[in-house]
Image (cartoon, rainbow, N blue to C red; front, side, top):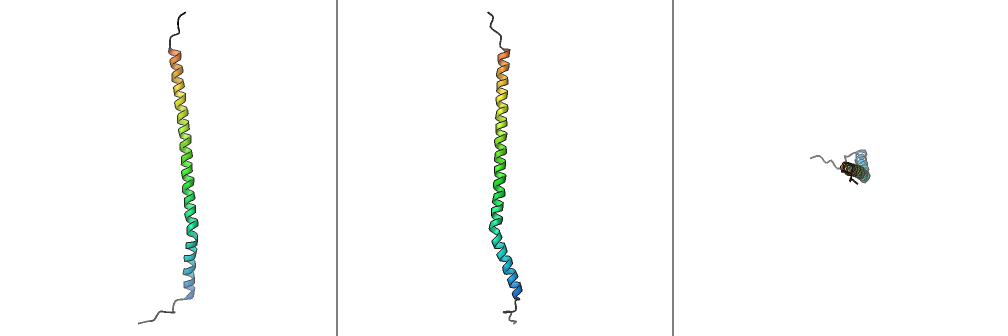
Length: 80
């Protein structure tokens, strides 16, 4: 049986350790970046929905006023 203890190149060990440290160090920042992206998307959709709801409410209000004015104009005038 071959004894492999001590045959690992220290440069390889340092490279793997450095890569693991780099990935471990960057994972919180990547998670927060993803969280920020999701929050921006959610906020944008909420603002879009609010504007859309406001426009629809204005259109409904204008239609109600138009219908009321049409009824008033269509009503017969009282004869004196």
